[in-house]
Image (cartoon, rainbow, N blue to C red; front, side):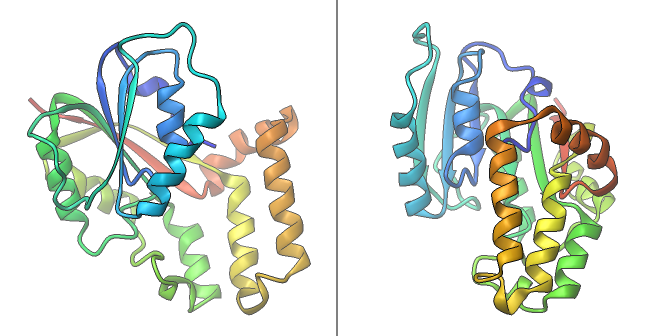
Length: 239
């Protein structure tokens, strides 16, 4: 399940792409198996997630045909002080990460340092009003260890990124069918782990992810601008 669309990244063979906060690797793997061969680097603070992302590379067959331009590198790293030289990446993505970190400006400064002039940076965060409902329904939601510590307003996020030398060129929303799932979890916060309603909705989302029927795909495309769980913004670094 990808939140970021790969086509607007305008990937070129041999480019270096950083997935900052790669987690268990959903975008990392999507980039690696994309038709355009690139070197993709995944970095995350959680060592266990990096190990899981590495293990998942062995669950699928290698890309065909093999290409010397395609490679993957994984590392455990702090997004505030990354172990890479200046201007070492052509594309950087940061999906569902900035809402977790104490100081997003430190992340954005590192991203600006690492990205080549003219390079593309993509950030996705929870959309303001669906996320605000979660905070209202469950006061414990933002206090979950490793959870969300802020809610971004879209224009606020745009301004915060652009002050680091970027200009936004595209915005869209994603995962509208996931918004009710999180509202349901928050409404049933104290019993969410045992709730049959939460379990049933989770099974629906898993079925939709695997089967991708035309009905739910059409529903999500229609509903994303209205109630998409995430907002995705694409920026280009000024020269």
